[in-house]
Image (tube, rainbow, N blue to C red; front, side, top):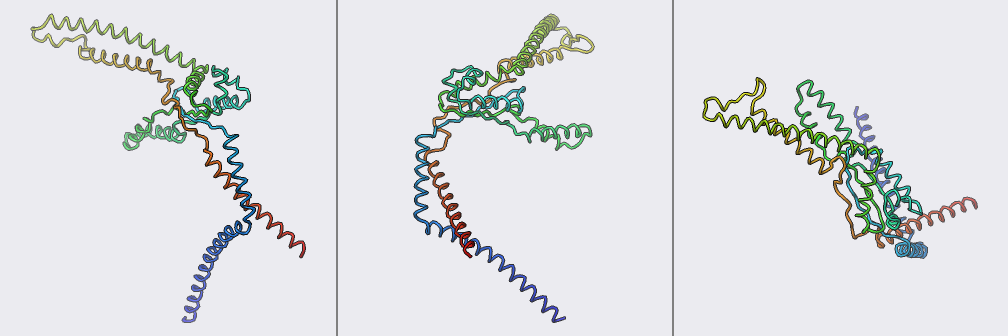
Length: 335
């Protein structure tokens, strides 16, 4: 028994020793790699100096002579008729026209001058509310239906109500990249009109507006009738002032003056909501328009030169590695 116990202790000691050697080997490997990274530039000073100098010159030349500064701005466009597929398809078409050397096609569909279209580089878009949030919303709606059917789980119901109140779930962020920041305001109007002139959206905007106007006319007519009825009630009440019980006027078995006044207020509120929708045009609106920035979004000259130098250093290491590998192959051939 004692020999077995002693043997187990020796085995555990060897195990921990091997684990220590393993981590020590990893650490030494990292140190050797860092030493190699440090040693290569020192042993190849001339090559690295030439590569870094050439990279800096290339980066400076590109930033000074070839690079064009561009400006970016983002607009949030909201419409119940917009969907991801429609917006993506529209933006892709605009980008194809923007990539053409002659941008007359882009100028034509946006109804802008050719000189203005020449400044446009690219369009991008993405939903303002992420798709995963919309999916989560639909799942929560189903949970709400089940919770209401079972008349329980108030926590789920409260969570659903909170999620349903997500604003701008029909909104999209549209970003434009242009060479001239002063044209961004004009491009906003042109881009919005281009979306609104889409036949799918245009017909639905017209139908919605027509329905709102019809409903407004109907409510105004009902409100006028209720005003006449209220005037008659008030006149009747005033003529019977002083008589006992005259203040409790009954119109029928199902309606009272109080209910008529409540109905009048309800119709008035509906009318105000329709007037607000007609004025704000909530079915298609700009939540936040383009902003004209004075600072370019493109990389600065310093950043370009720094990136060029880093790329040059990386190429230097690759070049040294290829040369060393070639020598290794040559030694193998000689052996």
